[in-house]
Image (cartoon, rainbow, N blue to C red; front, side, top):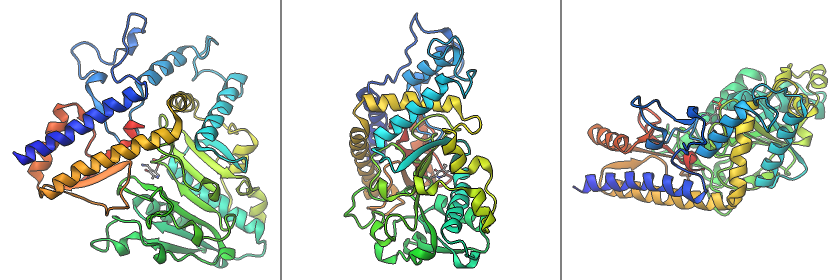
Length: 433
Ligand code: PMP
């Protein structure tokens, strides 16, 4: 009885918040299919499958997009801003698309209060593309600043708090074989079983390489799969230990914000040399990667090659992107257009401060509901208090039958994609952002 009641409460909370969020954002949960809407906006053919309005999609990314954005995007696919040409058909070098690129950059700048020291670039290749681009561009920068360097004299520091930062560190090992990789902190050492990612390590355990020998320091702000996130509160022991790193310029600090981008303000943004995010979690369709890069990191990768750096593919060169207003080659035009519409919605609904507060209160309620299941011996939260993600809430049921019951109950209510991992439920609050 208690179990059924707890499940029902959790499911009700999930369903209600989703509705309440979209309502508070002025974004409709139900599709607006009126006599003025083109017939293709009907999300299913009568009698075949689910209606969009019957489903709440918790997919961690690609994630749900607001209904009114999709409707507007559908119109733009046919006719972009009265040009008579669809957004995927216009030239990326034409004035309309250049304007869209500038508008999108200025929306990102406004929302995150990005200082003029940093540029905003758009590219393809996703978060994984940036695992490689970061290494190539930042090693090139190091060679330009230290012309007589041998690879064995260079350090690159990775903070490993989950699967994504681990993957990024492996890519760096592949691309920079002679360079010394230092794992500046390893969360597994502080976990319950010595091998899981369930915490942000204590500040005193972070050991960075000497600043003058370090090409960059890398961390992932929100570990999507593991549900581990650095605290936004600078006083918290699980915040990122910025004060332990060099002088704000060297070594350059790099952060993967793929799964928390635009869910709340970024603390200490100016202390970062580079922040990147794939769009598909919170911002728009997959295909777009957003890069916020300090100007001194935009370097001539070919000049660095003459000094010993490995060649950087031109599509990964931040300088090639910056010199061509993100249109060195054809950018992901449709994802950029949809992202522009999503950001319009965030700006018109109180910006990131408000969104951050909404997300804070939602995750608090959700963790409270799961903690009640924990007290009843039904489920366990995977991540230690203080390190828990606002975006991806991971917990395990103690019994496979209960897991099935929960998933079936959620499914009946139209709550989809709750099971994000073989052993864990990943509740991506991205759907609310
Ligand atoms: N970093 C993080 C934190 C992610 O969540 C993901 C994708 N889930 C990636 C990187 C990889 O992104 P992509 O699939 O766009 O390459």
